[in-house]
Length: 383
Ligand SMILES: *Cc1c(COP(=O)(O)O)cnc(C)c1O
Image (tube, rainbow, N blue to C red):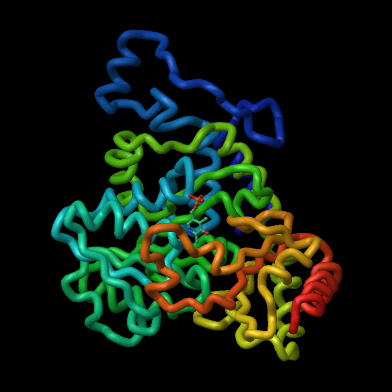
């Protein structure tokens, strides 16, 4: 992540005539007019590159995209209306019927549903593999078009050696994409490890305030140009100027927030180890794999059968029940509620996730207060 100096410099470069304003203006317009027939014609013929229409480009969105490209050490970025819009628009930009995708197990549930319910009927094959197979089987990716990764993953947060996976993929000419929402660019920069495309649900740490739903993709000029040419304009799931403004605001405090999330998560991991009711803590930290430099505040815990998870959830006062994560407020998501969806064989059943699993989003409240709340709820709900 840029330091504040760089962030300010980058913003000033994107809005040179903002009259000294420290925050970027929200350019709330759908279209941009031209001052002459000639300039309009030049733009449409590709001889200039000013903005035409906000579905495709907008200065407030462009400022956020530039900051994200910088944060992830990529060449370019493109914003989307949601993390899922970023994921689906990026994948659809690079696969066609008959192609094969290798996806990591325990992928974000709606990404799994996108593969199963939308891509499969269009003739795209998707296979799911444990993270260690991506690392250890150099030929897993032969005959594959795209490797779709999360590291750390959703649900049980398995981390993989991304450089190794990227090396195997390059040997087979396979495009690699990773959902880097968990680590944020503060704790992991996959492009520097050889991964081709980084995707974020910006609704989480990048926004940081649980007040917007958005997504962003960072990659090389070439890959981003392809998305801008194809799925951004034609699916049209663009990032709105106001949302981009909120995300730029979030980026200012991203580094500081991640440090605070990490400190709280470290405290929890240390103390959880001594609780008899806790079977497993899923929370990779700094250097769990090469290139991962910190522990974020999203973790899962597997209790033993002595804990009544409904009672535990209701007894918590600082952790509220809900989906999503990455904001100020701490949250709990019991797996049997959060991963169950009526009428489908969901990823929890498919990949054998324990029904005793709960996901915690450790927010920015005092770590000691959060721990006291956790301990007290556990005492009330243990048989
Ligand atoms: C929330 C989330 C998404 C989806 O993002 P939205 O902004 O909700 O569309 C994708 N991946 C991960 C890991 C997430 O947590």
